[in-house]
Each structure stands twice: as C-alpha cells, then as structure tokens.
Image (cartoon, rainbow, N blue to C red):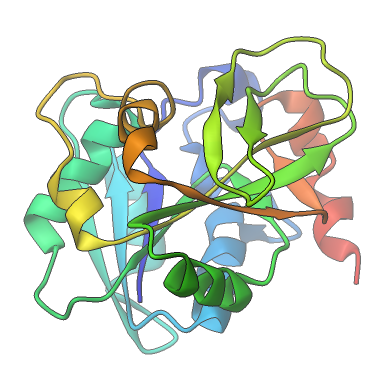
Amino acid sequence: MVGTILAGGLGTRLRDVLTDLPKPLAPVRGRPFIAYLLEQLVRAGVSRFVISTGYKSELLEQALGVDFQGRPLQYSVEREPLGTGGALRLAWERFGGVEGLPWLVVNGDSYFAADLTEMRRVHDRSGCAATIAAVEVEHSTRFGTVKLSSSNRLLGFLEKSDAGRAWVNAGIYMLDAPFLSSLPEIVPLSLEKDVFPAWLDRGIQVFPRRGRFLDIGTPEAYARAGEFFAAP
C-alpha cells in the first residue's frame, strides 16, 4: 500500500495555540502529531508515503526528511487551497506509480485507533474501489454523520447536526486506481461533499468500528491529545 497523509490544511482554529506551525506538526508528548499517523501506517504495511502539503509545507519537509522507518517520503505541495479531493488528485498525478497498490489515505489532523490491516481485508473482499472508515462518537455535532446500509455500503452523508451518538467519517480511506484516476479537475474539490456522493452508485464500502478517535481541529480537542496517546 501507499500511505498518503492529507496535511495541507490552514489550521485557522489552532493558530493561537500553534502560532507558526501547521497542524500535523502540533507537538504531542514531545513528538509531532503526524509521527503517530506515520507509525500507524507503517503498522498497516505501507511501502512508501506521499504527504500532501500546503500551508507551511517547508516546515513539514524539514521535520520529516526523505524517509520514515525506511519507507520513502514524497511531498505533493499545493500552491493554492485545492480541497481534500483536489489535493489528493494532485498527489495522484505526481506520484501515482504503476505498482497497482491501493492508497491508504488519512487526514493529517485526526487519528482513529482502528486495525487498518483488517480494513485492507474488508476493502479487498468488497469489490469496491473505495472504502471509508467510520467511527461511532457520542457527540456528532462537529462532524457529518455517515448513513450506511445493512451490508455496510455507504448511502450518503448528513450535514453537521446535534444528532448525539452517531457514526461519523473517521478520515481514513482505502482507494484504488479507478477511483483516484476519476477525480475531476475542479477547484476546490471536496472528497466528502463532491467526490464520494458522486461515486455512490458505483459502490463505496464502509468500515465501521468503535474505538478511540481524536480530531485536533479545535484547541479543546488538541488539549486532550497528550492523554489520548498516553492511553494503552
């Protein structure tokens, strides 16, 4: 697999906390947040990394270098905000490769403690070109909820609402070449709002699992990151 991290967000809500750092470099227990994501992807069996960067991209490259635990690191830099789908399309155009491996894509500001090796098995059995991970949260106010069928196929997304306990997008995707090659040249392009809804008729598998989930997008959530990663 190719491990891909979407790390180009502006992180405006964390500016007062992080000053000049991009969100993926937010320090957590003496390490940048993105290091925990890279380690999770290594455990899942990725052979190389593509990091999609934007805001303060040079700081990410300086901090991470050209490899992580023996896996090459490549950087796809967006010069203007492209949205999650646009950033992924640019990364695919630059570093898609010919090995025919799926891309395991994660958001650079969230962490879901799921078994990604199991997610790969579910994806391969599904016959779908796209699989998304979903996590059950107690308060879904900050997130769009995921609608899934009895066979765990994606039916759609609901906008953010005070829905209480619900399944939400965990920000982890297993994507094959047919899906990645079809990303339209629209700017900005959102995976959640533009791409996945347009792909529903072709089938999207959902990997719903309960587990520890952290999104550091707000100062309050970021303040819990140290405790989150200290847990066994």
